[in-house]
Structure formats: C-alpha cells, structure tokens
Image 1 (cartoon, rainbow, N blue to C red):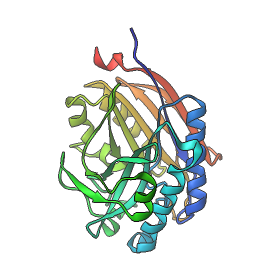
Image 2: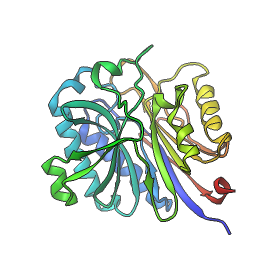
Image 3: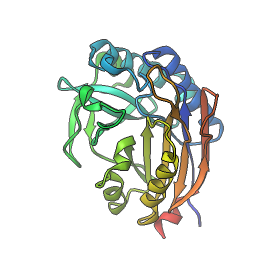
Image 4: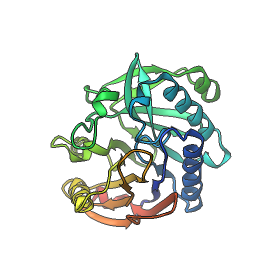
Length: 280
C-alpha cells in the first residue's frame, strides 16, 4: 500500500529589502501550495530579505524586520496547517547566520543555519555570515519577544538537525551545500531522512541548470529519497539574474520542474510522491 504525500516548492521574484512585498509573495506561494493540497512548502534562500542585500546583512534592522515579516507570515490565516521551510538571516549569540526556519502552525520547530557558504565567483557570503561548523549539533536559541508572543515558545532548537513527523522524516540543505564534496544530503540519506529540501539563490549561467539537475538526481539516485529544490528568480537589485527552475525529484528522477525564465512573481510546483518508493 502506498504512502502518498503532496509537497510543494517554488521560485519567487524577491527584491532586496522589500520586506513587505517579499512577505506577500511568500504568503501567496503558501496559498497556492495549500490549494494544491500540499503539506510541505519550501521557499528560496533568504526569501524574506531578498538574497542581494549585500552589506545590509551587517545591519541590525535587517534582522529585526525579518522577524517582523516572519510573524506576519506565520500568523496569516492562509499559512496554517502546512509545514513551512522559510529562508531568512538570524543572529545567534551575536553571530550572523544564513538560516532556514522550519515552522508549523505558528510554532518554530527548528532554525537550521547554513553549513557551507558560497564564497567564490559572484558570491561573498563569508563577508556577511558565519558557517555553522558543528554537524549534528543543536543549541538553544532564545526567540525575540515579537516571535515568542505569538508562538508561546521561549527557546527553539538551533543547529544541524532533522524534523521527524508521524509519517516521515525531513531535513534541509541550502544552495551551496548541494555543490560541496561532503554534501549534507549524503549523511541525511544514510541516516534515514526521506525528504530533503534545498533552498537556493542560484544565478543563471550557461549549462548551470544541467549541473543542478545532475547533482539533484545523484543526491537521491544512490541512496533514494525525495528532493525539493527552490530558487530565486529575476533580478533582486544586485547584478545577478536568478533563473528559477524549482524542481522535485525522487530516487534519481525529476518529477516536476518549473520554468527557467518565468515573468511571474510567484511560481509554485507540486508533486504527489509515494514515500514507500524510498523505503523499498
């Protein structure tokens, strides 16, 4: 008997520091995912702020406004009863991290910082963020009051961990980590993780999409599993063009793929997968 799950990922045309506009596009993507009966929605890297904020990532207000927008998203009526993977910067112990926020029904389940930062070619993430160097290690993060007031939580897990549900187990990668020799998805697969997410801010260059597809299919082709890839699209105010192309794959095959040069601000793709295909 199959164990079916409908999952969603997306490409968003986010703009640097357009906090309110970015939040509205995130909410719309969640609305579309729920309309397709998805139980998991994955979004691009740093989607709350936009990827190309440059030295604004060094300013405290960027982090404050990110939490304000996360509160707006998590309290929205259309954002309930679905597991959310949202990207934004977080300062922990006065150190800045590029993070994924895993949340459900106004509760934060995990803050997962990026382990491997992009710091070559067009990218200078080490200027703004610190990599999380402790694999399979979690600390306590004290939520800001604006978030604690709506979630009822004071502390949440911060670090490299997975989310276990009654039906499955999932964990997150972020952009560059897919491209590294010691990619987190390898250990995830060997540890029984069934659904892996990747949230990216990956720019367009010739043949780069082909590289992404090969990396994604290899990630699940050897050990099995479901892989969701989300990406920014358009020009967010910096000099790069992000080409979207969100994808969902399972066991080395691509099930769904978004458009590469869409003019839509929000593009959501979904797929219904049989988790038993990973377990066989």
